[in-house]
Structure formats: C-alpha cells, structure tokens
Image 1 (cartoon, rainbow over the protein chains, first blue to last red):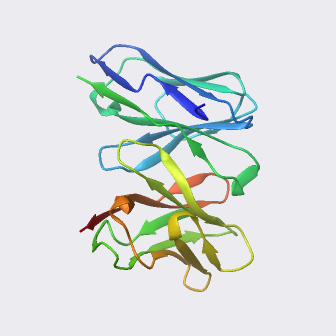
Image 2 (image 1 turned 45 degrees about the vertical axis):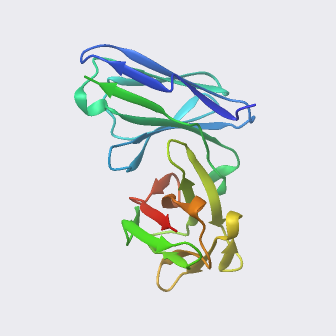
Amino acid sequence: DTAVSQTPKYLVTQMGNDKSIKCEQNLGHDTMYWYKQDSKKFLKIMFSYNNKELIINETVPNRFSPKSPDKAHLNLHINSLELGDSAVYFCASSQGGDGGELFFGEGSRLTVL
Amino acid sequence: AQSVTQLDSQVPVFEEAPVELRCNYSSSVSVYLFWYVQYPNQGLQLLLKYLSGSTLVKGINGFEAEFNKSQTSFHLRKPSVHISDTAEYFCAVNDYKLSFGAGTTVTVRA
C-alpha cells in the first residue's frame, strides 16, 4: 500500500493548457508539500500545507494553485502552462515539526510542448 | 536564511571502494540536517538525519554522516559501495522549511 501516491505519473500537454496533479498520503501526517525538480535535478519547495492550511508559499507564479480538501490530500492545479513548467513534481508529507522525515511520492513528470 | 552546498556534483567510484560526499550548510539558527537518496525514476527517501546528540549518525544501507558544527559540515560516508548505491544524493537542512543542496550523482562501477 503506497504511502504517498501521485497521479498521473506522466503528463504531456501543450502550452497554454491547464492541468492538475493529485496527491494522497495514507500515513496520517499533518503536513504536505509540493516540490519541483528541474532538469538539473535541483529540488525547490513550492508549497506546504499543515492541516489544510497554507504555511509555505515560495515565490511561485500564481498560475500554480494548490488545494487541500483534507489533510490527506494536496492537489496542484496549473493554469496556462508554459515551457518552463516542464519538470518533475514531487508531493511529500511529514509529521512532527522541523525534524520530521519527509516521505515522497514517486513524482509526476510534466512535459509542456 | 539557510543554504546548503554540496561540494561535488559527480562522484564516480569503483565497487567496494569507500565514498565521501561533502555537504556544507549555512544557517543563523540551530538546524536539523538530512541526507536523502534518489534512485533513478523514484522519489527521495531518507538515509539519515541529525537532530541533536551524537555527532556521528548512522543510517540505512551502511551510510553514516558526521555533523561538525565548527566547520558547518555534514559529510556522508560509506566504507564500501555497491553497484546498487548508484543514485543521486541530496543534503538538506531544515530550520523552518527543508532546503536541498544541488545533489551529488554517485556512479558505482564494477
């Protein structure tokens, strides 16, 4: 039973389209995250939610809108996709504050043509 | 503000040889330090972490790391690597959010 699961794993779309990535965790964690990994493998935090409340919002274009319907789910919607949005997006969850381990999903590879 | 510098972008190593991956951090407050591993086409998983206490931390798969406060370093070591250790390794620091270094690609050759 996968701890942090993301769908879809692969997404190929045209510039200007809107797309969503879904994430669910069954670990009972309070905090969930979205990270973006670019082609050089650099990982950057985008958003963090704690108990459905947004607590971290890094300098991400407002075309990206996270939504947390409950503490087990954190979805990412992206409007008006651009070429530079092509990346692997990772969802993660954690419990227990700053020292807590992050559990990552397997990633969603987004390719914008 | 915090930052993490991984000093080696690529480390080729022969099977059964030792490996050390270097990580330096800067932070104005006490930090928690982590090493994560990413195998090809997978998400990241935790190798080990330092929160407090003993400066030598042991992790999974035979890895260990040493926290050195005076040198602001948290280097990762393994005395004898296997082919299966080929992966991307990330050092990370957390004082209110987890920030990752740029990663070190370890390639183990027979």
